[in-house]
Structures are given as structure tokens and as C-alpha cells.
Length: 351
Picture 1 (tube, rainbow, N blue to C red):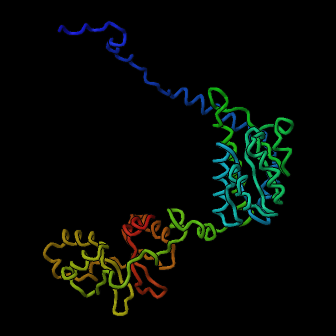
Picture 2 (picture 1 turned 90 degrees about the vertical axis):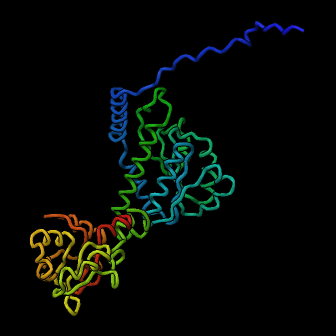
Picture 3 (picture 1 turned 30 degrees about the horizontal axis):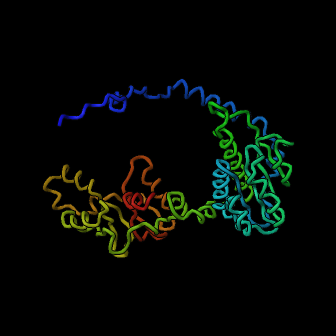
């Protein structure tokens, strides 16, 4: 039997190689044009924002007898969540995000009489928010809308709330003028600026702020004290001023501080001797170093710090002129050594 003939249908034709695609690029000129347009849109907002409305909004948050909830749909919802988290981090009032759809399926139970509900919507006509308004009002909440549409028939949310703040919007920096890339920036700038005003009105202290930021660099900078990160007791590289330099090499190198703390019998600080001092002394004195004591070559005027000082202050002191240092002896009011804090220890602690 002969072989079957090869079909000549187009289905058996080998596919042609795809055409080379042109790699899309963004030019500096295009970016500069868009950033310029965004700046003009933001200027439009700042120039036309009604400060009486903004002040009324800030005062409503300040005077809130209960919790403050933020809500929104889509990108406005993301901004609402961020503003809720920022306000909550100040510790002035209970604050949170209320998802509008979830609220209509039970989460509205978190609302109590006297609570404030802030509704963010560019159009002021979001169906999910309009459906939430009568339910929130029935719970006794005070309703505030933040919208970019002018009040009127095209902005039913403004009319349905107790207070409306109009966020003037000239346009979106988007090829179609639709994507919320400017309106959300305006919402964020407005909300964060009002939060900053509340911080000033409440006289928020660094300690109060730190109490709500215990983790991360913010919290560590505001909370950690020298006593929290210093070495102490058996970790200290101690010696007496009459000790021979070469007899203290193990103490100098084994404690991981790069120095010796020279003390008297009652642990008063006399001075410091560093591994750098060792190298310089060896270079200058040669074999005579075997006859030198630590007290003869130590620095008798070192920088020091107290255990109650902030850890970030220790770092600043280490880096201050005339030259940076890698450690600070920790002493009390009587100049008695209580510990040592090192730059490596501060960095390891996240500072």
C-alpha cells in the first residue's frame, strides 16, 4: 500500500514567525508633560478648596463622641482605608474602615449613635454608598461625604449627608480622563492634611505617637532608650589604668566593642582605649609598648551618654564632629560605668 498523500489544506501550513513587536517606551518629555498637568490639577484643587468646609470636617472628627469610620468603593475605598488607619494610629479615637457592601450584610452593626461615617466618592453617586446612607442614618451616625462632583442633582450623596466637603477636580491625568489618578491624590492630600491639623489641635506628643508605633524604625526611634540596647555587666570590656596594654589584648578583642573602658576600683570612668589607639601606639613606640600601661595611652576625655537617653540620641552623638566614633560609655550622674552602647548594636536593633 502506498503512503497517503500530504493534505494541502491551510491547516498544515507551518505558522509564520510572529512579527517583531516594537518595545513601548516612556520618554522624559512625556513624563514631564504629565507631571506638569498633575501639578496644575493639584493647584486647581488648592486654589478652590473651601476652607470653611475643610475646617468643619476637621472639627467634626475632633468632636466625634464615638468612633470614626471611613468608607468608599474602588480606589476611593483604598484611600478611605488608608485614612482610617492613619487616624487610628494617633490614638485619639477609635477609627476603622467600613466596607460598604459588607456593611449591608451585617458589618453595619459596628456603627453606634454618635459615631461619624465619612463617605469618599469622586462622583457622589456610587450606588453602594447611596444604599448605605439610610441604614447608617438609622443607626444614629453623623454622615460626612467627600466628593468631587458639584452639589446638586448630579451628586445625590452630598444631599443625603449631614456635611459635604467638595474636593475641586479639574480633570484626571489619564489619556481618557477617566482613571482616578488625580482624584485619589486629592482625596489623600486632603485627608492627610486634616489629620495633621488634628495632631496639632490635640497637641500630640512624641511619646503618645510612639506608644502606637512600637515596631519598625518609627517606633524604635521614639521608644528605644540607651538602656534597652546597651551591653552591661559581664559584656563590658573593663580594665584598670595600671594594667599593661599587652596584657589586655584578650579583653580588648573578645567583647566585640573594639575598646577598653578604663575604670578605677569603684568603676568610675577614667578613659577609653581603642583598637585604633593600640595600632597607633604600636607604630609610635614599637617594642616599648610592652612597658606601657593602658592609663598612659588612654583617652581621658571620651564622649559619654546616660542610660535614660534615647538610643537615637546616642547614634547622633557617635556621628557628631570632630570625628565619628563606634561606641559610647554609658555612665550615671556620678560617672560610674553602667554599660556601653555600640554603633553595631544600634544598627542591629534596627536604628
